[in-house]
Image (cartoon, rainbow, N blue to C red; front, top):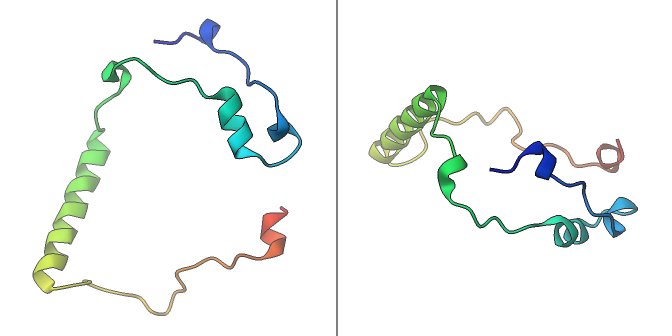
Length: 86
């Protein structure tokens, strides 16, 4: 496992002066070649949520489609120029 001492600072590049995700990734990505031993299993809350989700999906399949729908609340967030530059 990587220790704090082994971590390095980000390599600089175009991404520091403009939005350039590709440059950031190319400059700073290191392929992980280890195994999955660092991964933790699901928490109890995750297990409960997955069970609820699976039960609702089962109910939808039995009902032949969507169980319920609220058509009074918009499902998108307006994307305006003022939101981009905050």
